[in-house]
Image 1 (tube, rainbow, N blue to C red):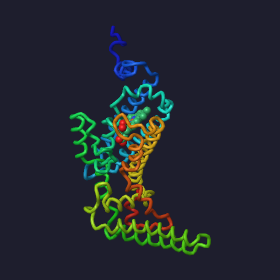
Image 2 (tube, rainbow, N blue to C red; image 1 turned 180 degrees about the vertical axis):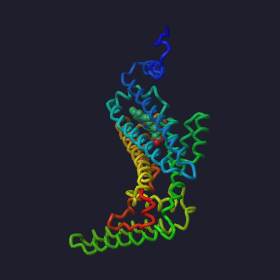
Image 3 (tube, helix red, strand yellow; image 1 turned 60 degrees about the vertical axis):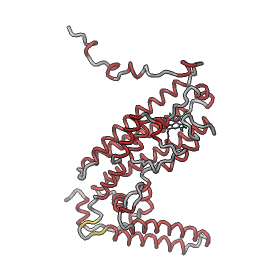
Image 4 (cartoon, protein in one colour; image 1 turned 90 degrees about the vertical axis):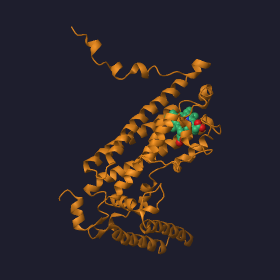
Length: 359
Ligand code: HEM
């Protein structure tokens, strides 16, 4: 008779719970007076690292799916699903800060001295996520001229530098956008059509400001200046001679125009999934910024002006990363250029039929 209890895969074994549940060793217990809240501190970090592992798993799949010169349409559905999942995990990670904040500053100080010099700075997986998404080393907010990878062992440093040399999701998305066939399709030139439409929209807006009976002259001047700023931004994009001119943290002209077309015509069936993919990347960037902000605020409450265990100026350093370390800024800027439906240039029939399901 086979003993099923011995041979069948058991919940405990499958999940390796013997390892996971015996991996919490509060330093306060080992070195001094046991502090109750250190268990929460350890478990919450471990939970983060497990989720980071899942995010990396999803990002690898996204990178692998979009790395080829030709990507099947069905594959875009796959990357949308992957990035939907990453968003949900990240939202959960922001929410976890609420749990950590049930610990007060004094509860934390009870065991903080035992942790030094360990710090979130040394989270290799967090850095991998940033690098895989496309955060470039020259773009990062850093302190004291210390490259972030100085925190790692030789092996970990080698791994992260290899990752830095590979194409990130930012790089691959840019290449994919550059290949959008609808920007110049036969004799249809999207930029030409769009420029006329954007000029019409802006001149209507300009006229309504100038002819307003409600606004003062000063208010009018402020609004006119802002509107001219948006116009300048559009001209800047369309007049870029080539995409070689771009800096490494911005999309090329072609990629930006292509993303603009996708955002503007997102309701066309073929463009809808590409739109959702781009929107997800923007959301991921924003949710990571939310996490950075919430983490910085929590550190503010816990530490005030105290320096971090990793040696930075703590909350001040973290606050600076909120905007500076964003990756897909160019996708968020696209909204500046979007036209309301009434100003959208009508697409020629031959393009419409290519973008629909009827051809
Ligand atoms: C009491 C709770 C926490 C405090 C007081 C705290 C404090 C800090 C401080 C001061 C830094 C700046 C680096 C330094 O000088 O050490 C930092 C960085 C960091 N922490 Fe936390 N942290 C806490 C919880 C967490 C949790 C739960 C995570 C989840 C993984 C985390 C992840 C990170 C990461 C990834 C960085 C690097 C951020 C970057 O360089 O952009 N921290 N933390």
